[in-house]
Amino acid sequence: MPTPTDLVSMMREEFRRHLELFYARLKLAPPYDSVEKAIKYLTAEVNALSPSDRARLSEESSLRWAQFRRAFEASGLHKKHRGIIAGLARDRTTLDLPPEHQTWLDLFRS
Image (cartoon, rainbow, N blue to C red):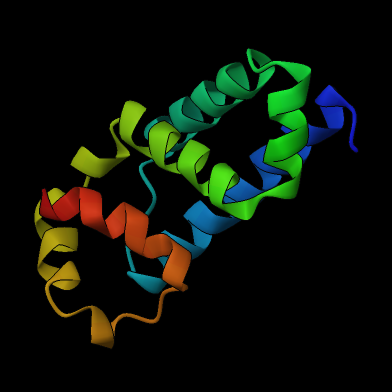
């Protein structure tokens, strides 16, 4: 099991990579201030978890993605480029996004 510091670093890096991929595949510039806000939110949330919750988080991808979604939403990323991304999300078959990114696209449709 990674140390708490290692887990936070790992999650920050994974989240940042997914955000970069998400915006690159949509051919949009990431809203950098909101990206940094999302990463700070994620860091605070993971640091606040109990050791047992952090252990589960390190092992379960679905739990990490739930954290990523909360950080995405809490930072306001779902409000940036809203019209453009909502339009793109209507026909998801044309988007070249990993299945995990659908959780973010869903935020643009609500």
